[in-house]
Amino acid sequence: MATVKSICVYCGSSAKGPASHAAAAVELGRRMAENNIQLVYGGGRVGLMGILADAVLAAGGEVIGIIPKFLDELEVGYFEATRLEIVDSMHERKSRMAELSDAFAVLPGGLGTMDETFEILTWRQLGLHDKPILILDQDGYWTPAKKLIDHIIDSNYAAPKARKLVNFVDTIDDLFTTLDALPDAKLAVEAEKL
Figure 1: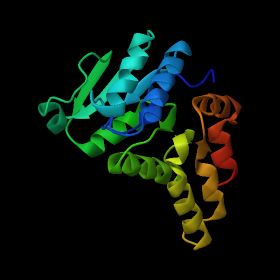
Figure 2: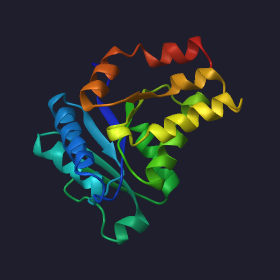
Figure 3: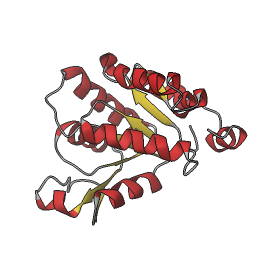
Figure 4: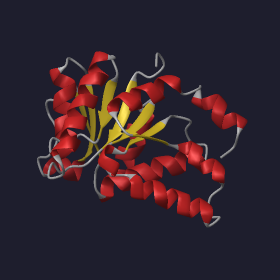
């Protein structure tokens, strides 16, 4: 994992989900800080986003938040972040988060998390980036998304190779183990156009 210095994490802006989701956010944040991996995320102080950022900072890590101006004006920006960038739009936010990250991790979340996840998967499919994408299927939360991807492939709207765009993992330990074991992503994408 020597080449992974920053991970973009997509997760919910709500903390109303199961306690195990919040616990996973805390564990991920702690482990990122312990491994000197910078958090890049949507810049919010609420929900799993805030829990994750708090955990990274509490363990001595660095947090880079990217938030659009309209959300910052609603006072949901995480001003305790190591750096908080305020951008003009959601599109610029997502582009900047991708630019600053070496890999992507997805925790439970809502429609925004799903939007970010499928967009970054699509960008990888199109060859716009070659960075690892890992989805934490905490308590089976993302199992329906995995089934949807399989359904899309089975219906011939994506090639079977599309399954290689993303790794579903069950625990934070699995996330780090999988990230450690992944081959150089750039070579993998060049070898097999997805």
